[in-house]
Length: 243
Image 1 (cartoon, rainbow, N blue to C red):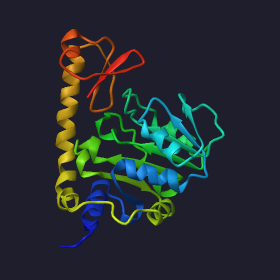
Image 2 (cartoon, rainbow, N blue to C red):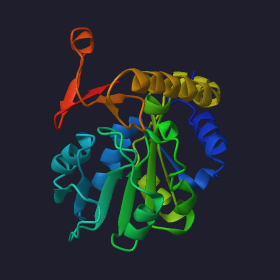
Image 3 (cartoon, rainbow, N blue to C red):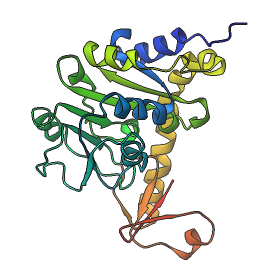
């Protein structure tokens, strides 16, 4: 048995799923490792982090001593070189139009779009088709699209130049034998899993007063007692998020 897991089946599964060459794909040991690697690689740049969002987006900047500021409006002018924005938002479920994202590409050296929840959006809003000729990094993870966080399959899609830069700074091992064995099957399961999650979300939207969500969770405007007593709820800006 090899000491290091074979990464190729994971890369090939990602390549087949997105119909992209391997030279546009960077695999990470989960999205946390990969995003941390991006910040460490570009730690001489300044980051604008669109909030509310994944807490590690700003924590990684603190860990690697990268200058950063939090912004609530992606159109807000900044002096930062890199923008991080989750689309759809992993907190509110809101989406930013594809055309707004494209308009930001000439305002930053790099735009990082975290599309971890992208499969759950019914809008055709992904910017993956823009990566080949732009300063764009799209982040994806199976911990959201399939709910298998423990397998640590996170990855970035970008042009060949950015991909090579991220690969030059990778750790020695970024996958496991189990992930390598399961990857081809896992990506084929995403569509059915997402369909079930969206059906559940739509059922809840009909039953309760909810804000629109483009994630695998719902956002209650008012939290019913029957939900409060049985589930762990995250309160954000006077609304309540339930995965």
